[in-house]
Image (cartoon, rainbow, N blue to C red):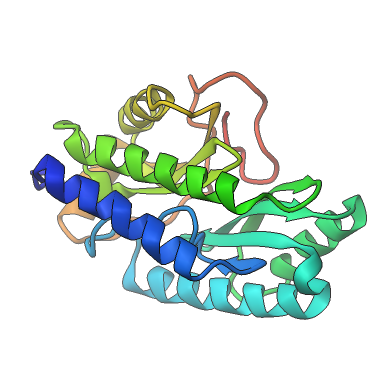
Amino acid sequence: MTPRFTRPLVTAIAAATLAGALAGCAPLIVGGAAVGTVLMATDRRSSGAQVDDEAIELRSAARLREALGESAHINVTSYNRQVLLTGEVPTAAARQQAEQIVGRVDNVKGVVNELGVMGNTTLGQRSSDVLITGKVRASLVDAQDLQANAFKVVTERSVVYLLGRVTQREADRATGIARSVNGVQKVVRIFELVSPEELRQLQAGTQPPAAAPQPAGGAAGGTPLPPAGAAR
């Protein structure tokens, strides 16, 4: 059963997310520090994958910082060894370079490159993104038919990215919730779809073999994202 939270506690979660993000603003951000994290300790990834994801984020951020310096604002988010890059870089060449750098990090299975070629976003825009993330997370917590901690939420320039190991029903339900949040311009889904049987194994503590992320289907319009096959 999904734990229930009071609205004041949910509001506190969003406020804490904002405070932590703004206190640590930097050109390169590990794990989407400005955009969201897994809601609770319980996780559908294996413990090994969780450790790998943390290492991937740290190593990627360090290498990107060394290569691109403060000219780029890049958020590195790894979920089950699949890396999402969001933020801004000054040139198309820098965008490609960032993807190649992260792709060479140990244990990375694939990279979804959502970097924009443009100037870095303002503090005001990043604050708005953090608030949107908090609202989406709070709405997922409030949903009675979802396990909120199954989702990782990242927001960049009012675009919400959803990651997680979820069933098709959970993917569609979470997408609808995120799209209903005020200020969200688009939802991009980067899910690893599992069957209901695989979900039961996960909930029982038995990890089924990890599958490559698949298009979740039925998301807000757009085309799949290579190489992860994320549906928009």
